[in-house]
Image 1: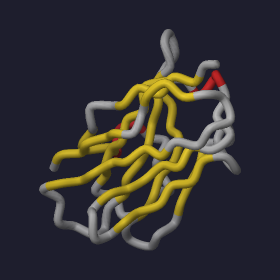
Image 2: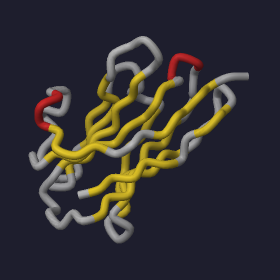
Image 3: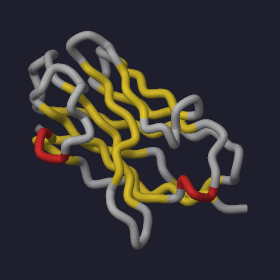
Image 4: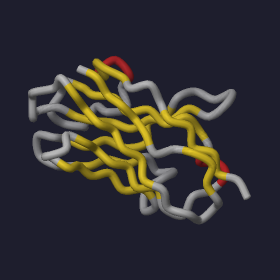
Length: 125
């Protein structure tokens, strides 16, 4: 299983870029895909989770109402739409996959089996 995150860069506050996580070598449709981020000097935190099993979604309180996670089944890609960006959203964003079909335990680090390489998002004017 490989995950390729892309779509980051230097963006202005208030803009709305979209991150992509392309999944390859992955056949099960009963898994979860999560987005995480790590800012300089801070611990990695969970941002959002999408259950491929039932389509349910979860969000961290810090991004709820601003970020949207979705999937394109045909392209085997999970997206993270970033809206109303703030400087504090600056971080390296990672996607990961878990063999668990639901996202109910998505904030537990031990459930994530595979990780992508990360894409930098820098929010600055």
